[in-house]
Length: 68
Image 1 (cartoon, rainbow, N blue to C red):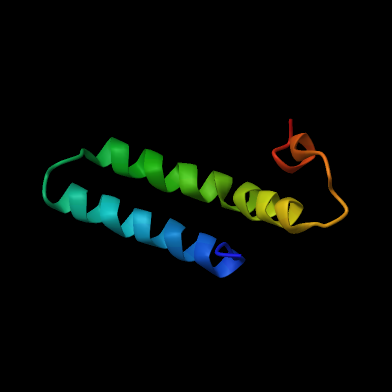
Image 2 (cartoon, rainbow, N blue to C red):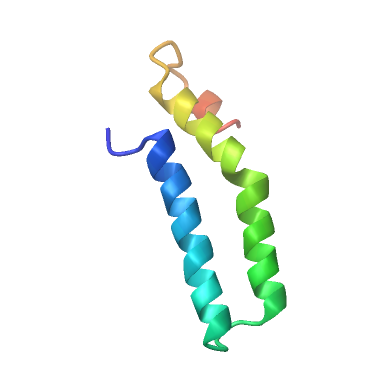
């Protein structure tokens, strides 16, 4: 499997660094940067939980994986 908890965390860190770079270059404003950081902070645990459900062999219904 290509996804792991460490890859999700690494990707979250990378996107934050990219947005910081975009802010420094003037391509986004401070508000967009703050919103992205808050979005990542708020959703990281859910992304990790979704991955756990996806990898759970006892879950057969994909709606359960995605929390539908």
